[in-house]
Structures are given as structure tokens and as C-alpha cells.
Length: 132
Image (cartoon, rainbow, N blue to C red; front, side):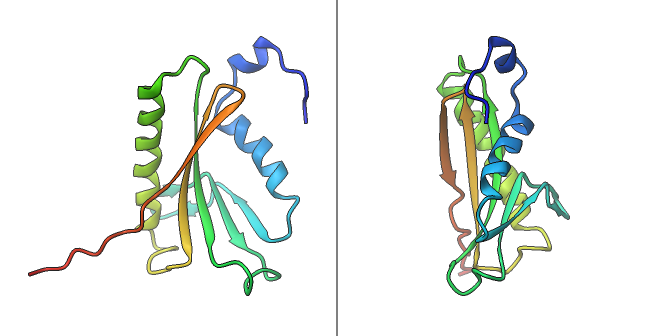
């Protein structure tokens, strides 16, 4: 991993750059199979952390992550807009053919802010609407 970054490095940062760095760290574990850009009927998610055969009995869930990036000078509104965008995408993936009906899949939006901050929010569980 790079320990020194230049301004040029920061000018070209986007979700793909961050995803490559994140995946390289996640793949060091044997608990999850890391699937980049899994295809759903409603689009491609950022990362799917699928339980490995070794961990099926010990891990309670799998994760679908959507990654977003805001430059350092991004304000609170920019971060909120990225979360709204990520939640809309995660909601589409949840209704896709692959995870539909699975209670063991959770959804996480991760917004990276500049080079040294991030915020994570889990998509709330889908609430069933009861008809009267």
C-alpha cells in the first residue's frame, strides 16, 4: 500500500480506485469470497461479500456494499446526496432476483470523503406494509 500520495493522486481518485484498494485488503481474509461488481437484474453492485464455505456456519450474514466518493472539499449536502444515491442503488439490488427473499443479506453504503475519512450507513431492513 502506498504511504505517500501526491496532489496528482488525489485529483484522480474515484470509487474504482478506492474499491481496488479495499478489495486488496478484504481478500486477505478467508471468511468471505469478495465479488467485485456482481451483476443483478437491476445493475451491478460495488462489492458482494459472500460467506466462504469455511464460514457458512459462523457468519450470520453476507454483505452487499455500494461505494461512493466525495472530494475533500465535499460538504454535508454532497455526502448526504451520495448516501441517497447509494441507498437507491442498494434498494434496487435488494429487489433483484439474486438476493430476493434472503434474510441473511445486508446492505451497506460507504461514502469516502477525501483521503482520510469515510462514513458508513446500513440500508434499513425492508418493512412489510400490512393491508387493512
